[in-house]
Amino acid sequence: MTDYVKTLQNAREQMVKARREVAEELARPYSDTPRSRTIFIEIQTVIEQIDKAIAEEQRLAPPRPKGFSPDDRYSEEPPQDCR
Image (cartoon, rainbow, N blue to C red):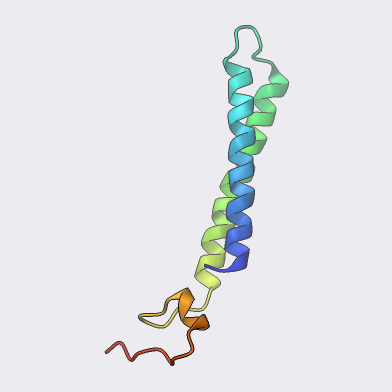
């Protein structure tokens, strides 16, 4: 996973939290306002765009060698041949 993907996933988590807060507001009796609905739709749109960006970043990321572990970069020994 690239740093870009991690950043996007963190942004998505924040947007999901915001969506939940607005949903709670919408669920309260007599609090369903056009402004709240608009905010909910805008947040949902941002989440969907972040999902697309994550998929694009994952597609653009160079493939990892078979048997690669992120911890391998800290190993003093060369990686084992995985054939």
